[in-house]
Every structure is written in structure tokens, then in C-alpha cells.
Image 1 (cartoon, rainbow, N blue to C red):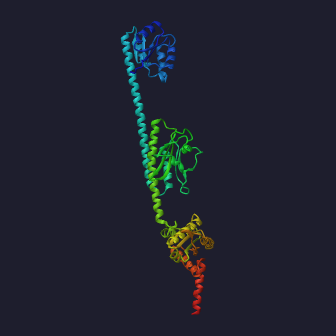
Image 2 (image 1 turned 90 degrees about the vertical axis):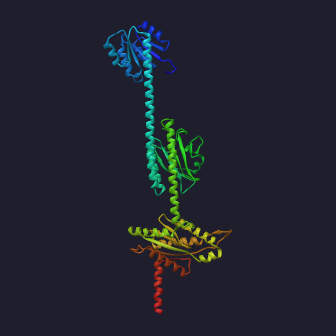
Length: 489
């Protein structure tokens, strides 16, 4: 029993009975009286008591009907009711119990027995309430455990899928789908550093009903405000741009590892059921963030390793290995689509002499600038490679020999116009010789295509360097030279 005295509502149409009953119970209980069934219903509805003593024989609403009406009200249904009546008949007692009464006392009442019965019923009701409370708590815990099990199952499934990813775009799609399942009632997003502009974070995944005003990009400095991997958005915090409601109803988790930032995870907590649910969501978000950052770090490492395997570190162009793998595929694709393809071999003129005179550091500086210039000229489908030493290769899908010649002529002129500073001075202008070969009908042999371009390159050198020569023209000139030699023999 609690320290607060139990409150008893006594309903009886005889004031003398109420007075006697009130005096008898006042030592242990707070007693409230009503002289009719209607008045008793009103008082119980307004302020539910702990127990009701109800007379059976009353004008208007008798005790049986009053009991039935009390039991029909959900908020009053569990209140114990004791019938107090002069009717000493088994039929009346059975009727009262069938109406929902907990006990039945006949007059004249014995005060001691009545008080003990009241105590027993109140203790029983207190036990019932305690059992109901524990049952509700258990249901909440079971629900939380089930939710946690579902979360862990979905999280593990996401991790397995992330391990099978080959690039970050695939990972972002998986994260978006998994987060939508994990945080079904909570909107959120994942932002990652923009590869094209590292000063910006780009939203790469979003789920739930995120506001239309939510930006797709925002300054990367927002991550500088987040310490220890987690923060709640505050009034002057840059993350306030996420929060469209209460500034304390969102969570941001910085995904960083080894000084590298891999993303920022945002979750709206406005729909959390209670503090415990909110804490569970925070824990899940942190756990998810750990898994995501490890997966993204692994993918970035894989991408860097792939890049290192196919890129020339000095020029930033693809290497010869990548050319050998890619050119045959491009030839087959152009053949299927009945489209042209041109290959160009570029060689920096007198580069060995340049290296001997100015040093290899100066030669590296030239190769870096030329590599950068070629990358600026590339279309999305073009391919630029360092073939070896000072020799470079360009593959131009969907380009005829004439189109390639025009493009390579512009490149030749721009290379000659390069001004390269080195060791507090300016290096002399450099020139380049270029040979071009376009695919012929049915040609799928990459080696032969590059050999034709290489032959055109040697023709450009033989003709004085610093020029562009197309294979068809070079081959015709070679045939004419061979014919002249035969006539003069």
C-alpha cells in the first residue's frame, strides 16, 4: 500500500447509513459519499476512487444498474465494487457478482469484517496494477528487443552487401536502402566529400520525408564543428541547416578514420517514442556509422589501388597496361556500333637531349604539364596514356582521321605554346611530333592500329618533326618512295 490514504466512494440513499459508514471508515480511509446512483457515477467519473461501496436498493438507478454503468466506463472498469444491502438472498448476491461486483456484504454490517474485506480488495487491486505494470514493461522490453534484433539483422545484411561493392556509388545505394529500413519513421541522409570539389559535402543518400528545402550540397566546414564523432545540432551550429524543427531533435555523426573524412550521417529524432527509444536510435546510428565509414574507407583504398595499377604517377595519365586492356574493347565496341576510332602516338621532340641538358627534374616538369594539357582536351570517351618515356598515346573513339588531325593539330600548337617555369627560370619551348591512324573496315587488332600510328609518327619525325601526320598519307608516301627506288635501280 502507498502512503496516500485510499479513497472510498460510498453510494447509499439513506443518510444515516452513510454517516455510520463514514465514521467507521474514516480512521483508515478518505470517504466520499453520494446519495444516488447518478451522483455516484458523476463523482466516480470526475475523480475515480480506489474502491466503491454501493447500496443495492435505491430509487432511480438501483445498485445493479449503477454497477453495470460503472463497469461500462473503461477508466472505472477495474475499480473494486462491494455491494452493501439488506437483501439476504442468494439470487441477489449472484446478480450483484454477475454485474461485476468484487464482494457482497449484507446489513447490518460488521465494521471490522467490512474494513478487512476492503483492505483485501485494495491489496488485490494493488497487486493487479503491479502485475499490469510489469506486463506492460515486459511488453515494451520485448518490443525493444525485437526492434534491436531487426536492426542488427538489417545492419548485418547491409555490411554483407557493402563488402561485395566495387565502388562507392553502389555503396551509397545500399546504405540508402538499409537506412530506410532501419529508420523507417525517421528521415535522414548521408553526405560525402565531393570528388570534384573537396570543399563541398554532397548528399549521396537520403531516406524518409526529408524537407524539400534540404540542400544537396553544403560546405565541408560543417564537419569541423562535430567533435568526438557525434553532436546534436545546436542553435548556432552549421548543422542547423539540417534541422527543420527543434534544434535538439536531430543527430549528426561524423564518419572519420585516420584523419580522413568519409561522410556525415544525419538522423531526424523528432519522432522518437521516448527517451529510451531516442537513446536506442542514437546507439544504432553510431553503430551504423562505424560500419559505413569502415566500408567507405575500404572502397576508397580499393579505388586508390586500382588507380595506382592503371595510372602513371608522373603525368596522371593512364599507363600502357591500361591501354592494352582497354583498346581492344573499344575497337570491338566501335565495330559493333559502326563508328570510327582514331589512335594517335605523340613523341616530345629531342627529349633525350632536353633531359641531358636541363636535367631529369626539368623533363618531369614538362611531362607533367603536357599530361595536364592532354587531360583538359579529353572528352568523356577519350583515353590518354603514357606509352613509355616521352611517348604518349591518345585514343579517340567516334573520331575520323580528319577530325583527329584537327584536334591533334590544336594540341600540337598548345604544347609548343607552353611556358614552363623551373628553378627560378623558364624552360625553352618544346615541340611534339604526332602520328595518327584511323580504324579500317573490320580492323580489330589493337597492335596493328598502334603500329600504323607509330609508323605515321616516324614519318612526322623524318619530315622534320613538330608536325601531325595521318597514317593513310604516310603509307601512300612510303609506297611512292619505294616505287622511286625500284625505278632508279
